[in-house]
Figure (cartoon, rainbow, N blue to C red):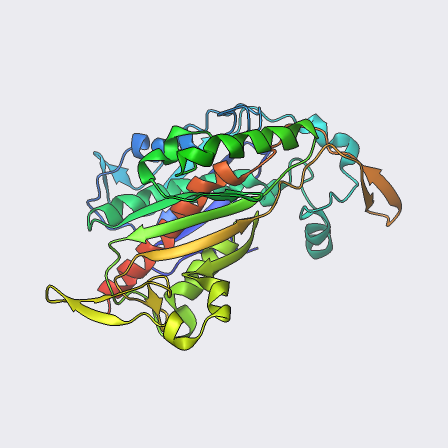
Length: 354
């Protein structure tokens, strides 16, 4: 099972949803980076459960402990290992469905691949695996900040409710992490309505990377946009990724879709950014823009058809503590995964030219 991603800035996550702990090992962090548990905790607090009435009531502190790679407040250049203990598991909630394949989950595919699976909350396929990703992303953000590179993710839509403006200062001012205060309340109300019906709903997250220099990305198989797509698609609830105008480009003509170059104040820029800041798999210096389709939470307390491990037809209704909409809590995951891939390519590029 592959649990590692990255070439220079490389992360390996480990642990299960209802195991003793979740964690990550980060390799490739340059020495001398100022780093503390508080830096990591700041990011983890954004994704932890039990934050509002629209998230799961599971209560986890998600308190991180750095085990290695940091000495006297700075990175040493050696692997950084971090751990977060699981404290509020209720594994008995899964006992009555341990032989059933939950619709929308990875139960069936894990069973067919390995012949064994951890039925308690999904094991490695659980959303709690993303704790390690966010912890690693916090380190990537610290590195990128040294070069004024920032990453901003936010909720673009919930169901059919879409934003009409982007105010980055509003993202953390509402429970849905929406940058448009005029629709944030509508999104929250829709999620609560779906929750009352014991159902769930999905949405779209947009992520923007600012001040990324031109030249990041490797030709052919390690294109920057290809690695962004892979990295974001590796998040369990993600079912689609588009860069720039994405699928809308299929409806345009070339003259409309092309980003024309201009010289502004002695600097080469583009008049538009339909390409989302990437051409030929390499960054252009324009903002890198990606959108991510997040599916509805598959665990719902409604009767659904399924089969058991013996292939017998059954009816399943999933009890427990689940998010009626995972979008608000996946925002920091997407933001930090983007930071990881941008950081990886940034460090790769430093080895290409001085």
